[in-house]
Every structure is written in C-alpha cells, then in structure tokens.
Image (cartoon, rainbow, N blue to C red):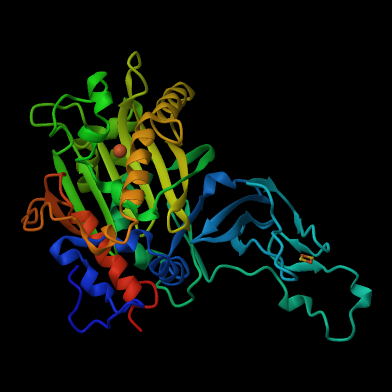
Length: 447
Ligand code: FES
Ligand SMILES: [Fe+2]
C-alpha cells in the first residue's frame, strides 16, 4: 500500500500534490479531498469513468426482457436480459439525441422505444427502427452502427454484475483477485443469494467518501449507535466488535470478520439459521467454512463504492436478533451530495418465515428509515459540513489506528490479515488505492 517514490505527481491547481496531502502510509488524509470540486472532477474521470462498478444482481432480472436502470460509475445504464437470456449493460441513452430510453427503475421489454423521436431498439441493443426513415438519404442512417452503447466490459461473480467503461481495465475476476475467496463466503456459502425486492435509494448531504470510509469502521459503533447500547440492543462493552480480523485483499478491496469475545459464542456462523449453516460444508472449502463458522458479522468493500454488511441485530427492543445481508453502494452527485443504494439479500434456500423475520429486522435497522443508518447519516453530513471551509481544508484527518500493527500469522485466508477488528488498516489501504488511481488514469494503472 506504499506509494512508489517514482510515482508521477498529481498536482492540483494551487500546486498541492495529491501525494503530499494524502499520505495513507502515515495515516494522514487531507480534509480537502472530501469536498473540493477540483478533486471531485478528477474522481469522476479517473475513478468513476474507469473502474469496475456494481450494477445489479442476476435475481433482479430473471426473465428475458427484464431490466433495471442503474448507474455504472455515475453514467446511467440499463441492465437487461435479452430474448436469448444474454445479459447486457447499455448506456441508458438514445443514439440520436441522447434521451433516456428506459425511464423506470425496472421493467420488462422486448423493445426499448425512445420517447423523443421514436427510435426503437431490440433488447439486445440493436437499432430496429429509426423515426421517419423515408426522409433519410442514401448513407445517412446506418442502423448497424447505431445500436445502444454497451459498457466496455461486463462481468459477473456469484450473480453480481459489474461493468466498466474502460476497455483496458483488467478482467473482472482478475480485478477482484483475492476478494473472490471472501465473496465466496458471503455470497456462495449456501449455494447462492438473491435480492429481496427493489433497492432503497435515497440521497444524503455527504461527500461520498465519508460513507465509504465508514464501511469497515467497527469502532464507531459503540459511540455513534450508543442509544442502541442503552436500549439493550447492542452489548454494553466498548470492545464488543473488536474480536476478529481486518483483511486487506488487494486492489483497494477490504473487509473484516468479527466474532464474539473469548468464551462467548454469540457471533458465530454468520448468524444464519441452522438449516442454512449446515450447507457451508457443501459450498465452502474447509478454510472458508472455518471462517464462516467462527464469525458472526462481516463488512467488505469492493473498491471503490460497493459493500456488503453481514450483521446480527434486533430490529427493536422486543424482537429477537436476526442476521441479514445488506448490499450497499454510494454514487456521488456532487462533492457534497451522494445517492445511497441499499439492497437486502437472502440465501436462496431460506424459508419464507425466515425471510420475513430477516426483512423486518433489516428495514428497522438499515436503509433511510433504519436506526443505524439514521445515526451514520448524521455523522457523514456533519463531517462534510465541518470539513468544507478554507481553514479546515488545510488540515488532515487522522487514520493511524494500527499503523504499526503486526500482521496475523494464523489467518487461513488470502490477502494481508491483521488481528483485532478495531483499526484503520482497511481505510488506509482504500485511500492508497484512491491515490494510486487518481495519480494514474484509472484502474490503479499508471500511464
Ligand atoms: S433522441 Fe431518441 S429518437 Fe431522438
Ligand atoms: Fe454505523
């Protein structure tokens, strides 16, 4: 995660070099990078124009013609299964004047007809009819060249579809690298997951990186969500989420696994029901099963802005604790405003009763109405406001926890693991990838 001294310098207009103000190797991150429009413009081009981005899950488009409209980076796409069951992701924009061609969150369509002048496309992207074709002269309308614009590469892993606008980006599986081993545990543990219902989508007045930074942060929980401790919904122990490991999986992918304190087997088997736990041995290697058996919750970030949260929580004071799997994404709208996406995922083999309990727990705890998200959003908005001014922006934020921590020698999984799941090793790795990507022309590769 150390930036090479030979790395090219990326200078901002006032002469500051990104490498000088963002120093993950020292645990010091400039406040400026969160709200500065100049930094944001660079992020759009170098991160959101070129990285790999989550678009949707197979289970959201099960039938031919099914589509969902989502961002890929920040550009709008249609994720669609064509009549031959091939999945595509097209820029959601007509080839004529650029009008949006799919205008609802989800639909089923054999043809996509642009409302502006009526060009219509097959669900495999081919332009079928333009408008008023008899008014085009010879060579003025070459339909074969005017199909919908596909993402440069589209790939899936455990049914999760990712796209990139960069034809030179490494293939998805190479990009995910060691993170795949951990994704197997989260998404493949019982033979597959599916999304329950549509995602919740809402906007927050935050810089997108504050939401991202929070994702593998365990030690904010006791303080930020202290009202839940007082209600008896979280353990009254500041270290309750510290028992576990943090893992740096490469390419900016980061995660943690948390277990109960020694002698407490509360956080185990990812909190899943017994019928689901029994499937671990069928779908996971012994090492992966060992991790799933020994841990109760986990959060992970697939660089830069897609996350899982496998959590055990009660939905309110009267309810039993349940485990749920929440998928999350942040899409920046401006330097200080962010669109949040939140999906509930459930194991395909889960019973209807189990799904109902999981759903009730999830909606009470996460998403725009969730008690956890309410606390978190207030933090992110206040961090954004307090870091915007010219005085604040001259200073750094502190990310030094675990800077000198030795790596774990007994962790059975790939990547670099650290004992103790309170630490900022993961965030530093994320910012190192940010710096490398911003100093390059995308995908962390220098040009
Ligand atoms: S913009 Fe789509 S048909 Fe004109
Ligand atoms: Fe939180």
